[in-house]
Length: 621
Image (cartoon, rainbow, N blue to C red; front, top):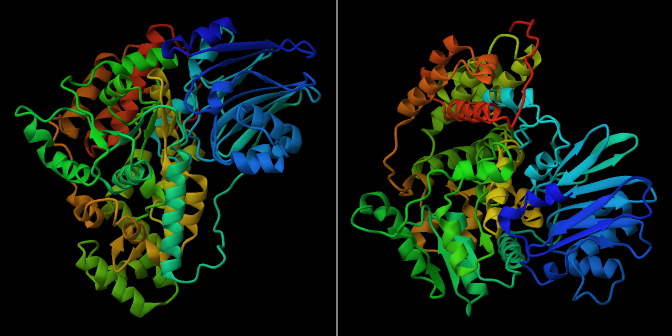
C-alpha cells in the first residue's frame, strides 16, 4: 500500500488516510488521498460504517446530493462527504446504488458481510478506475501507476491493445496496455468476490418522454433550462474557475453562461496554446484570436490568460512517468495547466463532446425523411442544406439515399470509394502492417463491418455512435491523468447525464432545422455568444495556422523510425516491414497514431517497464 500511495506523490495530495479492516477474513488495506475542490471534499477520507463491516473510498462529485439525502432520510449533511453518502447508498440499495447516483464519480466499497469488492463508475466515464486480480491479491486504484508500483501486477503487454491500435473497431473505449490491468467501463459496476469478477451495466441511453413538451418552443425552453443546470452543477468549488475557450459553439456557450451565472467572479479563460499574440506569431493566431477577443468583449468578468513561453515539448514523456507506461492522449495543450496553477484554478470547464449529442449536427435526418416517404419535406431539407453550403444538389442526394436503402451492396462499394472517412477506415482495416497470424479472421471481419456500417441511418444512431464508439472515454481518461498532475479537474457540462438524455430524446427535426445544423442549440444561446460564432459553419472557423509537417511528411518520418528500430523485439514481433509502404498510399492519421504508439511501447519494453511474450502465429490471415 505504501508503494501504491507513493505513486501519487507527483500531484501532492493534501492528506492521506489509511484503514485496516480488523474484522475481514482477508488482509484488507484501504487508503484515500485527498484532493480538495468542493466543500464536501474536505471531509473525504476512508469511510467506515458504524458496524465496521463496510469501507468506502471515492473520487466523486455528486450532483443529486439533495435527492439522495431525502431518499436515505439523512437530515444533517454539511459535513457529509460524497464518499460517505455513497457508502450509505450502497448499504441501502446494494448493487443498485450506482444507478441512483448522478455526477462524475468512481468509488470502491469493501462489503465485509458478503466478502466482496464493489466498484462503480459514472455514466460517461469522466472519472477513471483500474483494478487487477491475481492469484494472491486484488488491487483497485484510480492511479494506473499505483497498480504497477505495487510490484504485484505482471507487466505483460496486452496483445489486443497493440492490434486494436491498427484496426478500426466499434468499441473504442480506453483500456490499459497492461494485460493484467482492467478498467471498469462507463455506466458499469464491477463485483469481485470468491466466485470471480462480474461486470454489470446499470444505465443505457434511451429515448425518454417528457410530459408537457408539445411545441418546438417548449423543447427550446427546456433545453436552455437543462443546459443551465448542467453548467451550474459544475460550478461548485471553493477555488477560482477556468474555462477552455476556443471560438467554437460549445466552449463559448459554456463560458458565456458561466460568466452570467457568476457575475461577481472573475472567470479565467484558456485558448489553444495560450500564447500571447505578438508580431512573431501573428500569422498563426491573429484570425483565431479575433473571434475570441470579440467574444471576450461581451462579458466583463472574463479574463483571458496568455503565456510568453512555448508549450513544453517533452510533456508526454513526463506524463508517461505519472502513468507508469504510455498514457492516453488528452488532446489538449499543457501550457494552460501551468497558467492555471498560477491562478489557483482547480476547476476547468470544457465544451468538449458537445457535438457528440447535445449540440448534434442533426446528420442523417434526411435518411429518416426518406425512409418515412416524406418527399416534400425531404426536398425542402436537402434544398435548405444546399443553400447553407452543406451537401450536394437535392437530386444527387436523393439518388444517393435511393441507392443506400434500395441497393445496400452497391452503396457500400460507392462509400468505400467516395466517402473519405469510410475509405480511410476500410483502408485501415485491410492494410494493417501487422505480421500474418496476429489478426484473427473474426477480428478482421469485425473491422471491415465497422467501416461499412459507419454511414448511419438516423440522427440518434449517429449521436449514440459518437458518444460511445469513437473514443470519448479515451479522451476524458487522458485529460484526467494530466489534470491530476496539476491538481485540478476537468468538468464537462456537455456530458451531463440528464442533459444528454434530453438532447438525445428531442424531435430530430430540431437538430437540423431549415438546413441549419445544431439549430436548437444555436437558438438558445443568442444572449451568450457573438452572432458570428452562433451562426457560422464549422468550415468557417479560423483555426491556428500552425507550421507543422504535412501528414505525408510525418508518415515518412515515422515509418523511417520504425524501419531503423525494426530490430527491437516488440517491433520485430508485430510489424511486417514490407507492409509499411502500403500505409503511404493513403495517409490516414489513425495509422500514424498507431505507429507512434507502437514506437513508444517498444521504448517502454527496452526500458523494462513492460514485457511481452512472442505469440504462436500459425494461423495466417
